[in-house]
Image 1 (cartoon, one colour):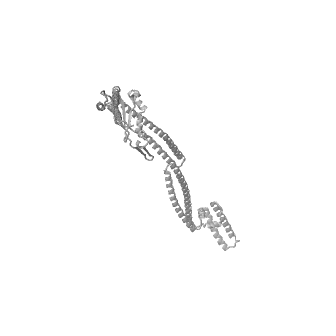
Image 2 (cartoon, rainbow, N blue to C red; image 1 turned 180 degrees about the vertical axis):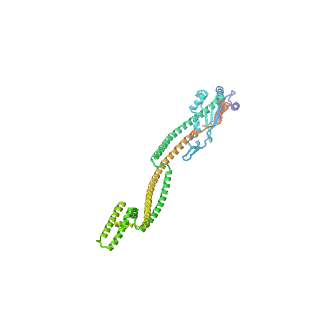
Image 3 (spheres, rainbow, N blue to C red; image 1 turned 90 degrees about the horizontal axis):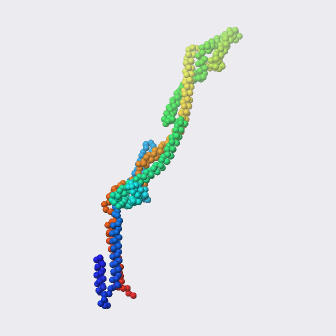
Length: 479
């Protein structure tokens, strides 16, 4: 109002300064415009202040409860090593590593969803529209989210804030469980497939072991050891066989007969009847030679001795054929060099016995050597077959180990997934509890300040218009 008084005083001076044509007071036209501006200013200011006063009287005060939560983003990892089977690793990356996703935006959206509002309203037993929706602000360059809930009383605002925070945590937990269940379903389906492959691999191993001659891994080692022992025994047997063969050849050369002839000679020499016939034949031969020297061939004594000698020779050949099982000639019997003297016969009999013994020993060693050679062949064949089956079994068992490693790793990963925090819905940390407001947020003192500023703007605007009109009147534009 001081401004208006100044304007009036200034206007009065201007009016007095204007020349007058008569004694009557003449009112300047600019004075009417001033009155109009003053009238509009009064009406406008009255309207502004009246509206503010009416709003503050009619509108109930509003209280706002505030609280803050933090969404930490550490990198979590779990590592499990299964000796002899495999390992399982579970990593949970920081949710802030992505350039296109921010978990705080997700929580901001979730906090304003109908599901959270309904859960919070049900806790307070009030309608959903009476609860209202929270104001959510994400603080830049931090992990903080600030929430605000309004109501007509401090206690009501705080209760709504607590209910909304509880509903938000419950809803996030539900979403987290749904994500974990989805992961478990995916892992379970894959785990079932891995288990099926493991059972198939184990069945192949069982079927192969049932049809294979390979009972355990020690068989190859045992067969290899046995094969090496047989080779060493074979070498020793060959050396002994060569030694006995050399002694046999030497004794056969000394006697001048073969082993077969020595065997025949020893058989004939061991028969008493044959020896009796042999002595009689030798004596008859000697007597016949003496008689041949004394008598003519037609002499009866020589003829009788000759007939006796021939009968002895026939008996000798028949006896040798009976003992040896084949007909023998007189020259063959002479070749055997069978002595008729007892002393010579005993000495030669020992030599023949030694020769036969060496022959039997040689044949025994030779038979053993052949048996060893066959055993070597059999063991070598068995070792080759066992090696092939061991390789095949190792391949099948390797498949079993791989299947076991995959199955165990996935089973461990399934267990770890239940303990790991979801990436999409990281845990919330309540930094500040919902406060109990002590002053209303509406109507605010700023409303009164805005009213004063609005009044000032209106008054200064009208004043500016009046000044412009006055300048135009004092200095009218030239024609």
